[in-house]
Structure formats: C-alpha cells, structure tokens
Amino acid sequence: MSFDLVFFGGTGDLTWRKLMPALFQAFRHGKLPEGGRLLAVARDERSDAEYRAFIQERFTEVEASKRPSDEEFGRFAEMLHYRRMDLSQPAHYAGLKQWVDERGADTVVLFLATSPHLFPQICAQLGAVGLNGDKVRVVLEKPLGQDLKSAQEINRVVRASFSEQQALRIDHYLGKPAVQNLIALRFGNALFEPLWRRESIANIQITLAESLGVGTRGDFYDRTGALRDMVQNHALQLLTMIAMEPPSTSDADAIRDEKLKVLKSLKPFTADSVVRDVVRGQYRAGSVAGQAVPGYLDEKKVPDHSVCETFVALRTEVQNWRWAGVPFYLRTGKRLAARDAHIVVNFRDVPHPIFPGTRQANKLVIKLQPEDGLELHLLAAKGSGNNELLSPVSLDLDFDKAFPSARVGAYERLLLDAIAGRLNLFVRSDEQEQAWRWVEPVLQTWANDPTPPRPYAAGSWGPPAASALVARDGCAWAEEQ
Ligand code: BG6
Image (tube, rainbow, N blue to C red):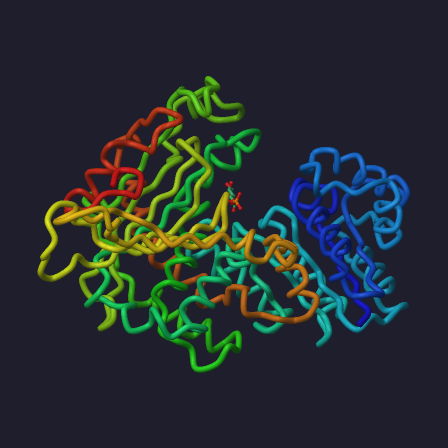
C-alpha cells in the first residue's frame, strides 16, 4: 500500500520530537508500509537535503536506543521530503495537491502538527482545492479548542471539508500499550467482568503524575493549565476505558458509542461541587530527584501573578447502574514526586473478616508508565505457624518483559493506525465535545473565583487538600496506603 504522510508544522517541536522518532521506529521495526513518502511543510525555504540534515541533527535529542545509525538514517531519509508553504496562500495548497496527485498514492494522511488556531484555515483551504477526497484523512493534534465553543467551531470547520471518518483526533494516551491492555483485560478475559461494578469496587483512582515542569512551554501552558492539558482529554479518556460497558464489536464506533455514554453519565459539576470536589494547585520551588527546581512563577514565559493550575485532583461519579455511588478520583500535575501514570481499582473489603491482623482490600493496579504492567494485590498466608497474620503479596505482570520485542510507542501506533485507517484509538468529535461540556463548569467557577491555586512544593504529591479530598470518603491515594 502506498501512502503520503504530510506534516503541517514540519519544523515544529511535535514533528521532530515525537512524530519523526515514532516514524523512524516504525521504519526500523519494518512496520511502515512500503512505498511511503513523508512530506514536511513549513514556512521557510529549505531543500529536501537541508530538511533531512535538520531532522538528523534533532535525532541527537532522542534516547540513544531509539537513535538511527547514519546508515539507517540514510535509508529512512529517502522517504523524507520538504515543501515550503505559506498557509494563507490558496496557490500553495493547489501546489501541494498537484504534488500528491502526480503520484496518486493509495492513502494520503495530512497531519496538522501546527498551532490549533490554524486548523480552521488549513482545513478550509484543503477542502477548497479538493484535497479531501475519500482516500484522504486528516489528523488533528490536541489541544482541540480552549472550551466547548471553540472546540465546536473547530469541528464545524473540519466537518465542512472532511467527514467524521476522515478526521482523526489524536489523544496519544490511547496509543499507549497499557491502554490497549486495559481493553484486553476487560473484554478479552472473563475473569474481571463480574467484579467490574459497584458491588465489588470501592473506588477508582487515575493518576497522571509528571516530574517535569513546564519547561520552555510556559506561555502555552499558562493559557492552558492542567485541566485543559491533561484532564479534559487524557484522564477522561482513561476513565471512559475503565467505566464503559462492553461494546458489541471491536469496531471503532461500537467502542466510541460506549465511551460517549460514560462521558454523558459523569456527574455534572455545579459551582458548589467544584469548590468541594476539585482541588487546583500550583508548584513552588522544591526538589525533584535530588535536583533543586524553580517554582512555576519563576519559569520562563510565565506571567508574574499567574493563577494557572499545574495540578488538579477531583472526585466524580459515573451515574449509571454499574457505577452508582463509586467515587472516581482523577489527579494530574507537573513537578510531582515522580513520573508515574497508573490506575488503581480498589476493591471492597471482605464482608466478614475471620483472620486477625492486617485487613487490606484487594486492588488492581494498571501501570501505564514508566513501567507498563498489571499488579494484583492480595493477602496470603506465609505458612509460618499457628494463627499467623496474613501478609500482602502481589501478582506482577510486566508487559515489557512478557512481550519484549513487540511493543510499539504511542505515536508509532497511532501513526500506523492513521495510515491504515483504523479509527478505534482516535477520539470522535462528540466524545471530545462532551468532555469539554463536562469540564466547562470547573473552568467557569475558577474564572469567577479570586482564590489562587493551592501551593505545593515541587517534588511532592500535590497540595494536602488533594489527600483530604479522598480522605473525606475514607480513602487514600496509592502512595499513602
Ligand atoms: C501532553 C501534554 O498532551 O501530554 C503535556 O500537553 C504532557 O503537557 C504530556 O507533558 C504527557 O505525555 P506523556 O506521554 O509524557 O505522559
């Protein structure tokens, strides 16, 4: 199958930091279909050779095991082309269409790795020159809007040129192997399904913790904040995967219909419940992994009195028969104690304890990163004598060890899916809008609330109020248990 993969924003961070390394991995693993052309488009004048040199140079920033040798890069670079485009010029889109048409590849994927404010313009121009035929797909990278209204506006313009099946919204968390394993765990095995409900589960916690700060993205981040950057998309997508009903097939829409139902069942926030159930924080100076790091307000390009949140913890519920009354806690933040993304399913305690000593309910930990695996925590008898206390043990499954050669990274997987037209792991516009609808009261309440975010020291697990949020229900976060 021949394909053309075009990157708008071809010299930008996302392209060289994530997309090119992911494509190179796909190439190295022999997964990239033969007959592909990769075309980067951007504003400045460069030859193919100059662009290739630029990408090769950037590869020095990629972790060593994922870096190409000169020989490998030489072969990879044969696919790599560059084209100058002024995105406001219709003639430049006509030129691009001509470049694509001359070869007539089976599939054309247009990846918009630009700032989202350009999406409407790019999509309208692509439609105007007819670069939106059946074999064309457009990939949209987040952030897709700042709120419901702007997301709807982007979707309206995209829809004017591309059908829903042609528009692929990326949430790179859905490409992570652990997330596919979550679907496999739930719907490829019969073991957990009877337990996957309010009768057996006490609460569910989703943690997306980062140890990095905002880095050089202070200006972008300050307009965005953790709620828009991580909760509206990544955390909510994970929540839908955990809470959804079994889909009737593995088709993209069967899965996405079920995810949408979860989003529609989330307990709506009110101004009062935002104050009670949502904690926002902002990091202060501290130390991460033994290194002193500055506070958010001292980061480059961050305004002096910013009230932007770099941490969010919240409590919600999924209002349906399966989950009524079960708290779902989400938390995410920058400059936390560790890079650690995981989901904890806390089961209910035994109904009638007969053993002395330790009481500890079972829990299933789904680890997304840095490791990718599953842990099932149980109590067991050591067999060391009469009337012994039970001891905690865990069944550990490390997917990196179980499948040493077959793992592919999130962007690699999603790019291959985009080329192959597999839509399961892309977010449909109605899901995305529903997620905005749900976070909107939080954004509005914060906009009207002069109280600044709660401070937390870099290197901690966030403000103490996040612990109080779960303690109120008699629960604790994983690291506090
Ligand atoms: C992005 C956010 O979507 O996800 C970043 O914009 C965040 O702020 C990143 O750092 C986290 O992704 P990962 O895969 O490193 O957990």
